[in-house]
Structure formats: C-alpha cells, structure tokens
Image (tube, rainbow, N blue to C red; front, top):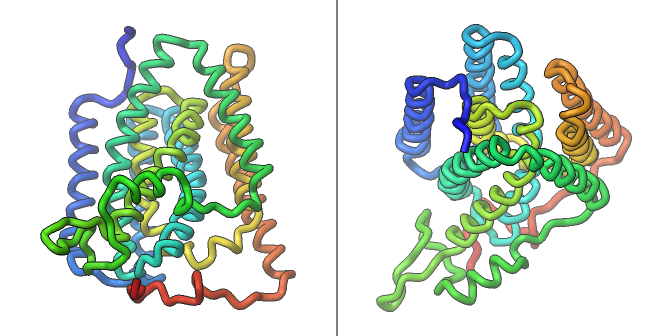
Length: 328
C-alpha cells in the first residue's frame, strides 16, 4: 500500500488532537458540568466560537501551506457544515419521538458526537488509503454521491422516523430498557437489573444517523482533497460545532424548506466532479464558489417563501413540553 501523503506533521496532528480533547473537556467539565437547557443566546455564542476557531485555523493553513490548501480546507468545511444541517433534521425527530427533555439533549449530543469523532477518523483514513491503492473507487464514490443527491431531492419532503427503524426495534428486543428517565443517566438500576433509559436509546440513534450521514459527507470532501490532515480537521471542526448549531436552529429548521434542494445540488456537483476528475480538473476556487452559491440560493429562497407564507402555530410532538420528562 502506498504511503499516505499529508501536510500535517506529527506535531501538527498531536497539537490538533490535544486541542480537540481540551475543548471537549472544557465543554463538559466546565460549561456543561451541570445539566441545563441550552438557550438561543448560549447556542449563538458557542456557534460563533466554533466558526471563528475554524476560520482562524483556515487562516493558519493558508499562511503555512498556501492558498490552494487554504481553499481546500474552507471548501471541505463548508461542505461538512452544510451537510451536517441534515443531521439536525433527524436529531429534532429523535428527541421529539423519544420525548427527550431539553435539559438532557446536550448530554446525548456530546457523547454521540464524541464517538462520531473516532468513527469519522477511522472512515477518513480507510477512505484515503483505499483511494491511494484503488484509484477507480473515485468513480464509485462519485456515482454514489450523484445517486444520493438525486434521492435527497426526490425525498426532500419525506418525513424521517428513525425511532421506528430496524436499529431501534433490534435494540429494544436485545437491550433491557425502560421508558422511565433517571435524570441524566443512560442506565438505571431497577430490581437489581440495569436498564437502558430513553437517553441511551436516543444516543444509539444519534450515533447511527451520524454514521449514515458520514457515508455521504466523507466521500464528498474527497472530491476537494485527499490530504488526510485537511479532510480530518475540516470534518472535526464541522462536528464540534454541530451541537451549538442544533440548539441554534432546532426550532427553525423547518423554515429552511429549500435547504435539502441545495444540499442535493451540492452532492450531485461534487459527485460529478469526482466522476470527471481524470478528464476535467475543476479548480478549488470554482468548487468553493459553486457550493457557496447553491447553499446561499437555497437559504434565500427559503426565506422568501417564509416571508410570503402566513405563520402556522407550531407545537412539540404530541403537544408535550420537551423540557420536562414524560411520565411513561
């Protein structure tokens, strides 16, 4: 197998991983040491922090390795950030269907995203290694992204019900569980027997959904760059900001009615770029401009539609306040 080429030295890899660990420890150990409902202002503040850190890191990449890699990181980050919005749609459904109190949603997302960091690292290195050895896989990835983009467009109005999927049915049959909450705990002891609480079931669905979305997002960034360091860091920065983005957009995610159209366009574009990579080389600046334009157009179109559509009163699932545990 060929050696993977990367601009990241061992020191850079070690420094970045140490930074991620430190930020996660600060997040859980200091800012969210005690469970609380994450309000809009706090979510906005953390979103600004994560985006600012990603952009500062981008400036560092640009300064140290040049404009081409700088644009590759920014394009990869934009792809991962935009596709992660699709995760939010699913997270909203999961928390609503399982009646997860807003008080504990951050804890579920924290541990779900922590495991996602490890899984994505494995998938990234495996993907890069496979492309280094089997170049023809680039066409397979391209075709897969095109088909995924078309499917997303055709099913853009379809409602997701992950709580009724095979994973949840299998988990409920094989894992002793209860419908009762025990504070922020994933398991509770009842009659000398440990039972999984709804928080653990939500965690399973969050992790499973991230794996599914990673199958789209990771091949997509391979259309931009195959450098493991650029792929990994842009991916991780997008994931780290996912929790704050969830609490920022969860209540308004349904207002972006054309966002899935934009995301499908992005997937089809990067899929075509991968499929024709040996015939036509699309410059990084062009890719960045096309992807940014597609996302901006879908957001603007959504806002125009909302402005011309009378507001409809919204309620939580079954009219229940998700900030309070349900009495199962």
